[in-house]
Amino acid sequence: QVQLVESGGGLVRPGGSLRLSCAASGRIGTISAMGWYRQAPGKQRELVATITRDGSTNYADSVKGRATISRDNAKNTVYLQMTSLSPEDTAVYYCNVAARVIYGSVYRDYWGQGTQVTVPS
Image (cartoon, rainbow, N blue to C red; front, side, top):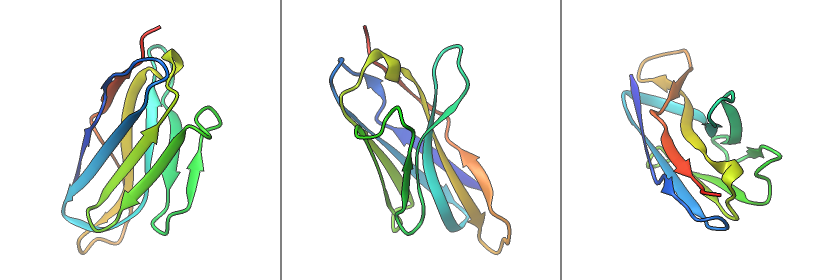
């Protein structure tokens, strides 16, 4: 199995910035795509950003220009840097990876437990 541990959430002032980290561990064979999703109260979980193993990125329109996703393949870690935060960014942020376990042949999705980011109005 693969475990994900997120860190970096908390209370952020409007206009401030944050950096989230997500480290994968366990019986990891290969990690392909990594990403961040978020879920605000009363809303569905939505994509924030994804990054492929070779570094190609994709961002939600709502965070383009304010977010940067990156990864360290040697550390099996993905990061999300966001700036100019507003109350609309308040949500639980979830890390997601597509990984294949050692000796496995199938990639599956793994999710972190989520980290709360709150930007007060």
